Image (cartoon, rainbow, N blue to C red):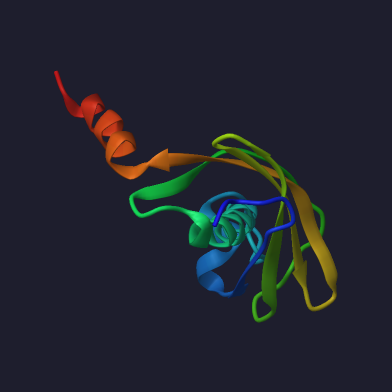
Length: 130
């Protein structure tokens, strides 16, 4: 099944001491950290595309342009949603948005590329040589 425009994904998490700005060293406040917001958006995106891939293929994130618009305290559930908006060969662009129980907390655009696992890992491993 090919990756198509309109394909959607979702990922969720509970805000805990382990995913705060303090834990990520991205700030000093005990609220949902922006690095974890990014990760949640990427999770929603790759999970939406994964069922469409052939065995031995994955996607890798290459660009993420988001805003983190509202703080979420420890104890609240957060979730991210993604929707494929562009398919250009192996390049896929997605709209991403995140929410907590009180409303939107972030939004943006995410780009991923389809890669062949073996080839991608071999290229990465070459960095360890010489």
